[in-house]
Image (cartoon, rainbow, N blue to C red; front, top):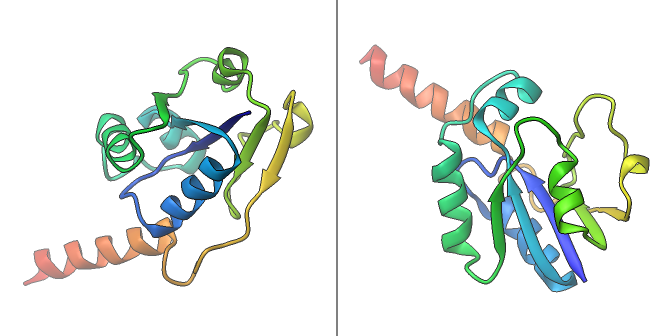
Length: 138
C-alpha cells in the first residue's frame, strides 16, 4: 500500500523522523515536502531551510522512500499522481484552509505526538530566533 505524508520538515528532527518511521511501517512511503511559498502562505513565515535543503535532508535520512516537492498550484495534485491508500498526518498537522480529511480519496490517520515538549518545530524555531538575537546583541 502507498502511504503519503506531507510536511515542511524544516530542520528535520526526531519528531519528524518518528512520523516518517511510523509511515514507513505502514507501506511504500511517499513524502511530499512543502514548497517555500506554500509554507509561507499556510504558516505565515518562510522555513529556515530552503525547500531543496529540506528535501535533501529527508532523502538522506530516508533513502528508500519517494521524496518530492509539493505542487505550487494544487494541494491535491500529489494525491492524484500517487494514489495513496493512506495519508498519515502528524499529531498537530493542520490541513490547508477549506480542506478536511473528508476531501481525501483514501483513509486518513493522525499519529499521536512523540515528545512534543522536546521535538516540536515551533519550539525549535523559537530557540533559534532567541539564539540569533543573543548573538546579534553581543
